[in-house]
Length: 206
Image (cartoon, rainbow, N blue to C red; front, side):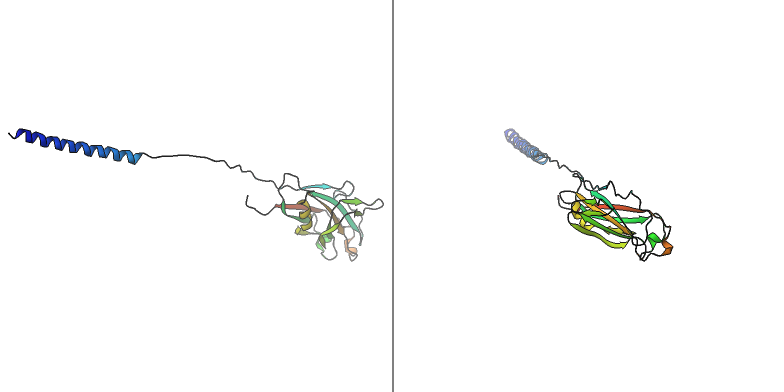
């Protein structure tokens, strides 16, 4: 009489176990499943150049020696600074001058060689009857007269010209021996080196 009742209870227990197992399987699928997606983009990056070149006047460049100076004489030489089309704009251009020999021509700041630099908007032209360099355009002072040896002399007007459409600065370098130079300057010689340094434009948000 009790056998059917026992058999019915066993069936209910077995059904409960099957339901629990099914729920655990669904939960596992939710833990390891999910939607994903990927995308990419490329950014091209390249650095610029900072290059400055120098060309010299065929007749009166710095390669032409200046000899037999006496007090009151001047020496004029023409050089052209260039910035090529593939070069970034310059933040500044500066000039450093050094002397090959430490004698009075370079060390006597009052009576030794004096330096001045001017800019011509159209280019310097040698006068037919002398070594004087003349300009048919606008002349701007780049470095006012000063002792010949100097470090990092700012060439502001030249920088502006180099950053303009023409990308060139026509410079006239003038060396002068003051009239106050006395007999102790006789027979002296020296070599002045001109070094032009260009630096990059200010950093910008690209």
